[in-house]
Image (cartoon, rainbow, N blue to C red):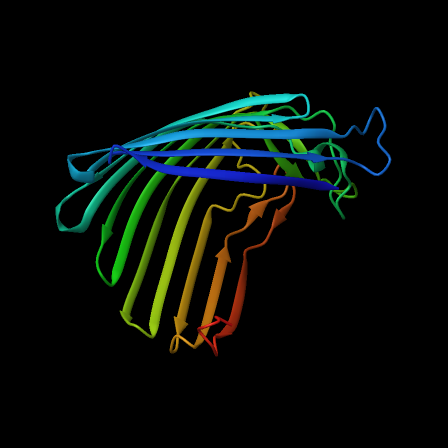
Length: 275
């Protein structure tokens, strides 16, 4: 079982500081707790400030998050900047250290065909990204490059006939680029699409794994969505295409490329009250 609550507070100070504070608390427990399967509490706190200069054309943001989950305590700081340029252009960049303790389910809970691993260590990463965005009244185009260096990355692996379970990857890297676009030529039609290229490498100095791609991380991912119709009756279609991906660090199992297609309709017959 799991339960928790979260509260967020935001406020603008002196017309240029955008303060944000977050506090969350909760717990995870088993119906029959034992020494090998403990229950624990969770606590999270985040404090951030976005400072704007030159009428908001330049913004500097800084934040730090503290997470406590059972015996694990981690801190994640981040620094970012955004600059508004002429002709609807903007540039943004972020650097930070991300830390994630293993989840309660990853450590102790059998989840369908997924087994736990009680020896998992905290995952840490140094991350950075740089992006350029062009914004128009009816369109948007963005290109972002990103990279990360991981220590003790937590990732699932599958070695049949055993079930899949999470393991720590001592050292790994990920880098790539994402292109995203959106256009709304008329009020009744909206289309968006994105493409992500991701290159991952296992940096453990072992000839069985060295420089091989990480499991369950496809190199190519394409997503497209079209929504059409009046505001009260909106139809949509989505497609997600992923390239093949490994299921373990040795590369002995490969999940073939696949595509998911979704379609749906949203009906809003009344606005007050909105139904």
